[in-house]
Amino acid sequence: MRDVKSLLAEKFKNKDFERQYHRTSAFFRLADEVLMLRKRRGITQKELAEKVGTTQAVVSRLENASVKASLETIVKLAEALDAVVDVRLIPLEQVRKEPDDLTPSNIQKQQDALKGIVYFHGDQVKKETSKWIEPEELSNLLSISTKPSVGRISRSQKAREYA
Image (cartoon, rainbow, N blue to C red; front, side):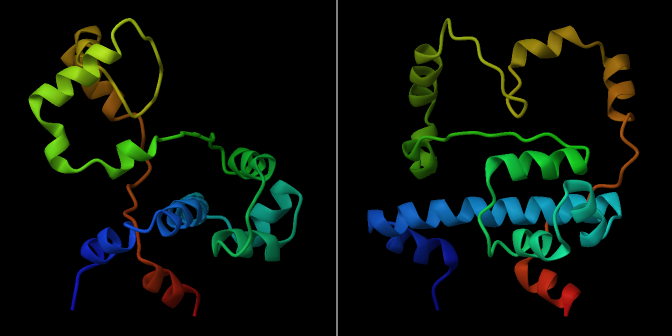
């Protein structure tokens, strides 16, 4: 029996399959994020639906990725969950990148290509920014959130939870 990574690598040779996989995986990731954030906030699907101005059935379909929400609906969900929407477009060549592409010379080429470009992305913090925060301040920042960390759960665990 093959593992998932080798199966996907074989399937990704078909570009139509790869395109469809990435298209649908975005909706499943969104569904997971909405479900997990709703659970962390301790609200029901019905309560979320009331905040958004829709029905519980719509929230359920969104959490099961059986409906494709508009960006406007996603923003409303985020606002109701006291969250923000982070939209990223990732070039396929970056998604396809093999670990051996991360050689020092390739990394240097990528950094050279980005010189002079200023951009913001919350996930990516440059090493230079570590000079801006003193160690004492960092410990204060790390203790700001009192919310417990919730790990990802699999689809089968999610299905059992609702069964």
